[in-house]
Length: 322
Image 1 (cartoon, rainbow, N blue to C red):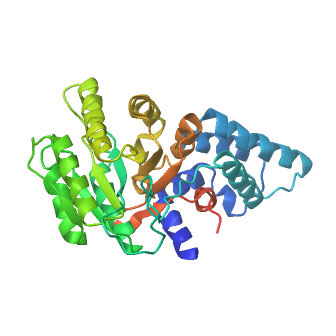
Image 2 (tube, helix red, strand yellow):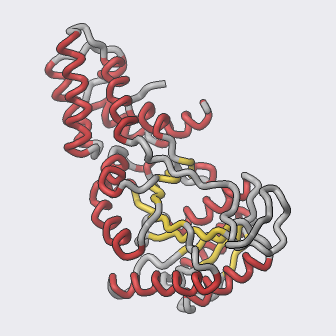
């Protein structure tokens, strides 16, 4: 657990540093006063926690300060973390390690795959630049490390080099991939990938979808086409439809998420690039708006830097608690 918290702390270092600099190290040992409360308010806005969350954090710290004029910065940090944990209650997505059974499939957990059970399909959705393709590869690697069997489908056939990018990751991480050429029919690739994953008895099929076409409506139509093709194989597929959100965009990504949710019926989120931004609070606003579980967050460039989202570790890390 400590190792995982260390990942969060290091990955959110820019957000933590920005809050510390604006509050003059308030959480490092200073006493709370009127000036520090104003500094904290500015810091929380700058970190993109949003009006609602910032107000809730400040209200509880002010109440504690009214009761105890000797309130320490660390105590204020603990209050802030407690508020975040309350706000983010239910935000942790949990990807079941067992596969979702097909109707009539009575194979018990732990029995070797025979090809009789359908793979669980995770469709990775998002605009170009969100880290969707690299996240697809990192997720496949993570599942493989946990003993699951995974096939990658390179269905972002519209973006130049996207297929090659996923192939490169697959080679580097020794992952199984089904791919075609740039410009190929993405739904046809998804069709072939599902058949391959089914025939080989794979636990998961991760589908990297297109992030941009000529118009937004074309993109949504292409995603819908992939979904229809997968459902010819398995009416439940894709069981997971995750939007990959660039965390450095802050609250600007909320409208983007709403559009995808309305069109595709998202089931979860992956928030990437949190290590490269001081706006790590945006994650809270995204969850408050959409109420979609956050399955993973990206805390660095390496495959192991894709980590399951932990409310506890996130709340403690952003307030500089150990």
